[in-house]
Structure formats: structure tokens, C-alpha cells
Image (cartoon, rainbow, N blue to C red; front, side, top):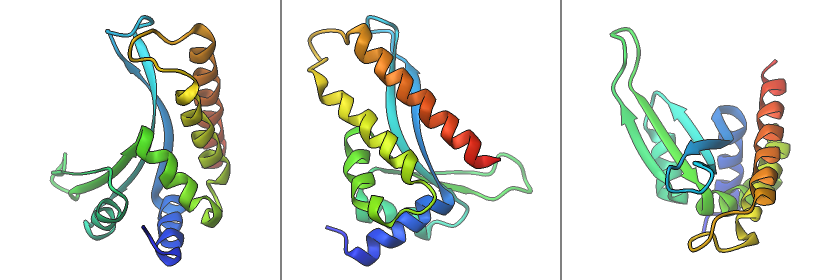
Length: 146
């Protein structure tokens, strides 16, 4: 379990460098052909912080070579779906800029517990609720960028 100091530091990283998103993915096996997933990411050109996030909170860590000669290598830490919800809940008290985004993301992930979708398709109502939260989060992120 992370310490309060580590949670506060992680919140600062998410506030400054992080992205909280609900992404729509094609999923041919799903009845509707798509699904939504919560994903929190941090992209940096130095490996220390993304590596620390991975070692402390889990998720995945990838590094990508520069796409152009003048660019730097990218290190991307990501945490998704079931892991992202407790992570966001833990750092929520320390967030300043992305409180609303985290709250929407936590609410979104809570809709996943509304039923077991492994053996039956999601209802139209659940998909609509996910879409509404995805749009709400996207709109909030876009207005914060202005």
C-alpha cells in the first residue's frame, strides 16, 4: 500500500502530466461491436516517474523509440479499468486539477459492477450510461485544455 506522501505525489503527477479518459474500443465479439474502458496514463521522456508509478501502483509500462530523429524516447505508464478505479479513489483527496475527471471515471467504472457481462450482453441502458459519462469526461477535459 502506498503512503500518504506517495499518494499525494502520484496525484500531483496525474494533475500535471496525466490523462484520465474513457475510450471507446471496437470489440467485434460484443453485441454492439464496441465497448468503453477507463484508462489513466502518464507520458514522459524520462523513465523515472513512469517506472515508479508502475512499481508502486501496477498497470503497465511501455517505452517507445522516437518517431523522429529530433524527438525523445517516450515512457508511458497506464492503468486501466479495474485497477484504475482504486488508484483514482486513493489519490482523489490529493488531486487539485482533475478532481471532477477522477470522480466521473470512478462513477463510470462503478457501472461495470451493474451486472456480469461475461455471459450476457450489456443492456442498451448500461451502454447509454457509459456513453454519457465518456462524453461528460471528454467535454470536461476539452474545456480544461482551453
